[in-house]
Length: 166
Ligand code: NI
Image 1 (cartoon, rainbow, N blue to C red):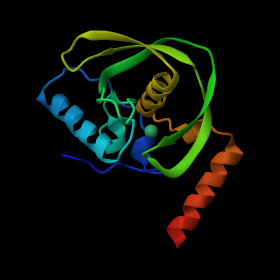
Image 2 (image 1 turned 180 degrees about the vertical axis):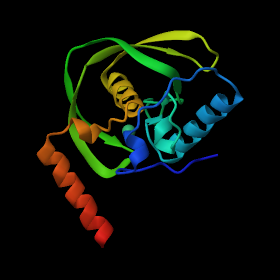
Image 3 (image 1 turned 45 degrees about the vertical axis):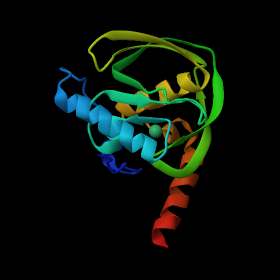
Image 4 (image 1 turned 135 degrees about the vertical axis):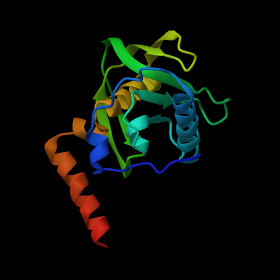
């Protein structure tokens, strides 16, 4: 079942999510719903708080359109190493019609649990590394616009207000 994706400035997007204590049917269903929601949007990543569930679960699929899908489900993800720097354009399903360049690490090592409850480590670089950082930020109540200069962020908020007044 697809869910409504919360958008800025929904206060739930500013909340810190809590770790998943046990991987039960509810969590497995949540991951399924998140994947359906992400592919329908379409997007390359989604964090549970974006559909209003404050749990530390993210999904990512950065595979190209002509490739078979490669869905990553990461529970309680932690960045255990990061290096290098990159400055790429990012967007977010919770920040519609806006994108901006964000400074991120070029490479990250992420440790998380899979849906089967096994620990897994990803050595990510490029687009996947950025996606991990972006989605893990969501678990801490951080949006990509929070990484922008105050001036740039204000410009976005102004644009948003104008649109909702229309
Ligand atoms: Ni996002």
